[in-house]
Amino acid sequence: MTTQQLQRKRPYRPPGQIGGRTRLNGTFKRRATIVGFLAPALVILAAFVGWPMISALRLSFTDASGFGTPSFVGLANYVRVFTDSDILKAMANTALYAVLFTPVSIVVALVLALVVNSPRLPFRGFFRSTLFLPFIVSLAVAAFAWSYLLDPQIGLANYWLQAVGIRIGNVLQDPTLAMPTVVLVAVWKNFGFYMVIFLAGLQEIPKSLYEAAQLDGAGGWKRFTNVTYPMLSNTMAFVVIVAVIAALQAFDQIYVLTGGGPYRSTETIVMQIYQSGFKDLDLGFASALSYVLLIVTLLLSLVQFLFFGRRGEDTAS
Amino acid sequence: MTALTRPGVRLARRATTRRHGDPGRWIFFAGFLIVTFALMLPVIIIVLTAFKPASEVNAFPPTLAPHQWTLDNFRAIFSELPFGRLIANSFGFAGGVTVFALAFDSLAAYALARLDFRGSRILLIVIIASLMIPFQATLIPIYQLVSQLGWVNTFAGLIAPRAADAFGIFFLRQFFVSLPRDLDNAARIDGASEWRVFRSVVLPNAVPALLTLGIFTFVNNWNDLLWPLVFTTDQKMGTITSGLTLLTGPGGIIPQGVMMAGALIAVLPLAIMFLLVQRRFIESVASTGLK
Image 1: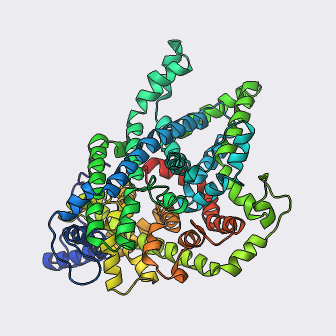
Image 2: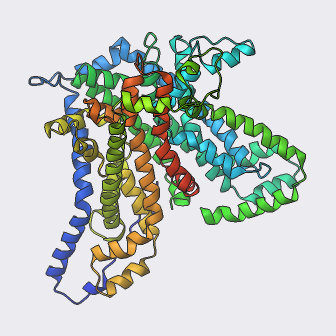
Image 3: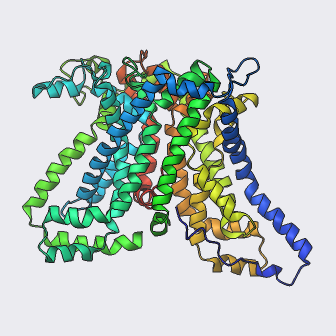
């Protein structure tokens, strides 16, 4: 996001209004115009973003359940968020998910971006579009394909891996392998998106830097560590934060593939919000959990904003 | 961004023609083709399994392609599920959100980009800040509001909360700011109202941005699972994504071949849309880093 572009330009007065009409009439008409343009969006945002923010905060201090009158319970819900063993487990799982998802998806995306950016690769456009395809497939639908691929009896993954002597068994029912598997599905869904962001970053590196490195006799790996990687640091940091925030909201493929199991090993924060808010109707508690998620996300976004306040200047079009 | 990359692309082209005889290039190509094939395996599986007869879907040893191609799965999904209805709902929901969001976002973005007024900067900052709120965090109060309005299981309930969004306003505002002001000033000197300037000067020039945002909004809503899961308790009001998930998820009752036929149909409209505008779409995703 930009700081420079936010700076207000010299106040603009429509030429028709200068001098001409009476000032009062002009101002009123102008105000009405401004309100007319802003009102539809602002009404929606106030009702469905602003109000829910306040409402969720209020709910989080009550024992609301959807029935009867909720009563004030102070910080009890928040205490429960940080003491309930199921929630702590879900938080640990979400953290594990983020720790697995972020580096793996970034390495995959960066390597692919480097390959499809290489002038040596024929048909680069075809590869770029194809590799981006998973990003437009819904995570829930992709999860069907993965569950069929990974099926312990009839899945191709097991069959092919057995041919080379690896037995993976029923990964989705295995408490240690279920989490890596749902992470794998998310990596598969998102690498194309991160790849495209890296690609944009790569294309902004001045060619002269590579030429200079080549003159100094730097080989491919040296050119990567001394030119590409440092020049990508902004893009990299941006992708890291976007990936971590996406990881905090993990839900779809988990809901489809494991339902949070086996033995709660893939239970995440958003799974718990859905469960406590919409299945157990424990609205006060679910709101407290939502607020914890909100605050963590806001903190991460703030880091992003402080670090990359300048990023938008070069890229926002 | 295009302007920046074009010289690079041209240089690369020249380089590739020079290296046409380089055999290493084609080994590199073949190797990467295999990697790409492996990465696309889930998509390939959806497409091929959708055409397999039931006996082959569950056969061991498994095969990638069907021996005998069949359309039975497609017939089954329409007869066993209210699938036509789910498709219509998906179009209604994702299409409705897209139309309203484009209209409301562009109006607000125009005011922020062109109508200087006191507080416009603060308003923009508030809108940017609200981008950071994950929708899962406010889902419960939104649900309560929608249910108080009696809108659960209606298109109004699915669409209204998303009829405007902070990202769209920000995205379009950035685009409008980049358009030269000379055009609209000329129209204003001719006595055009702001509405007229917006409709006849700014909007026609913003078609690429509206298209990108529109496709993005459509894809996101079409694919969303949690939202329709929460706002539709009646299966008849579900979308393809939520409907397929409920009927085929854990302990699902629908055979896998039929499920893949459903998945293929769910992906198809998006794939077609993507193929039509892929280059522009990828470029603008890259240039905004949008989610």
